[in-house]
Image (spheres, rainbow, N blue to C red):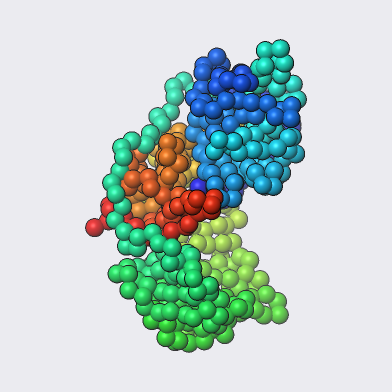
Length: 532
């Protein structure tokens, strides 16, 4: 489900020092009442009957509720993935992941175990969890419950559950992106097959696969489906793509041993402990020293083009690369060209590769941007500033205002003013901002793009976009398809797993159930219909 990890950029959490969010008037708590009638299909939320196609029952003194009904009643956007073979359910409620393991009778929320009361059970093909466990599950997902939140009326055979929820009190609701349409049949490069145990889309039209029958056998094939190279079982342990039609090979050690071309021909050995991908014909390499590490750059033939003389370094972009002249790799960042000449004075605490003609730098005064002449076109004055994408960037001022700026450093718009108790997160590949209000066990979230606040539904869709398409779960079938940024289904939901698109292709999986309760996993590759 989650295909990325947010980067924590600033945190001033004051948990426990203020009451229910103190002076934050826009955050309020509402309480919902859930009622379950044992021996019936009657399950209510605030006296509204919920969809339920199997009876609620008692077992060992516990009220047994179906997982899907309860989760979707609490959060209509909850996503449940059921692994029939392993009898393992994975549930996403916003930012929170819940694992329900029937054989182990185990419940985990995020990375913490829940003390399970009673036993999880699969009945009539549905997963049931004793009601008593919902108190800790929901509390860990930022809902307000205590020991008195669940009341059992033995005379009526009825359970009452009170669940408090934090919500943002807005003047008007945010628009929710809804998934519509049925989509079209996928166009396959590789139809789902049992032949492969895994397929990696590594870019530039190359794929690395591991055979299922011959464990340890690896192949490279291209976007025509042609197998270019085969590595017999036991000959190598790992292979990865470097760019420039070059692949690195591991043979069981902690560092790559040599580099091959797409046909598997060995080109040169790697006498370094780390080798990163090629950018603009040069790859960053690292060697260990007595005091730390040293970095340099090699060409596509393995020749050392720029000596191992930097305390830290990044890849080339727009003809230059950020490097640290400090022996420790901390501070003294400047930029070199592809000949190793210093072109921008090393004076920054940190620096990132150029993007859209500007490079992000950090000085004592804050964060900002320089151009290729080394001019500080956006003076280092912000507590945080994101990369520029499509001409704009997020910036956080010293007085905790989040704004959008242009390449001249001019404010385009103000998004919000951060209270002291909030944290903010930014993920470059999504170009979206997430703000957390620390309430209860964890917090509630607000989401922003460059134009302002967006709904969680819109955020979830946009954060999974790759080459114009986002993998989305169809709640009716439990299968994944792909929708565009407007929510229009483009590729029909036929898959149990669906990866991001890269260079026009995405890896997908189908799980085919067998009569003995096991399943057959088929792996394939589909084409992006938006790219011609």
